[in-house]
Length: 231
Image (cartoon, rainbow, N blue to C red; front, side, top):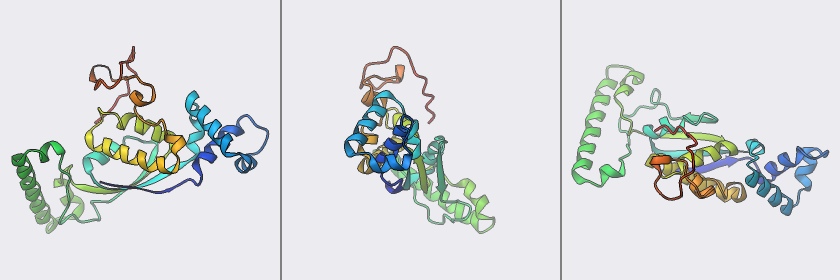
């Protein structure tokens, strides 16, 4: 898996702080942006995070290059709808020699790993045969969920909070959890204060809302929040 933060809103923490300060100031946003001290930015961000006042964080965005992930992962990723995606097309990019992702549970058992490789080879042969007779957009129907794909994804900060809360959780599917953790590391490099407490509730609140599905890392909340996680 390869994850890289391609670009982001310049000085995202100052931008969020200025947007938050504007709500309670007669001064314009441009002046606030220039005049805020580092200490004021720190104080405003701490207040936003502590109070759960997240709407100002929607003003900053982060764009990621994502490679070496499966179509199974990408089908989960696009369920996070407050984001923008561009994905490598199997209609226009031919897959005569496609790469694929092997789940760790399969890779750990030599017989299963061998069977997996054999199955992928069978699918590859079927795809190549179909490609000689039908358009690529039709041949792709035999390609597996394991097929490797590449994406560009753009999230605003508030949407990333939700993404990290759900997908950094130990109950999330292994591949998208690895992606979420890698993305979190990327944004923490450029906006450490904004994302210091981004993650599942066991990390941010010290409690778990997963009910009977909890991994036991933190005490259960008195009620389930009904996160509606889809895998």
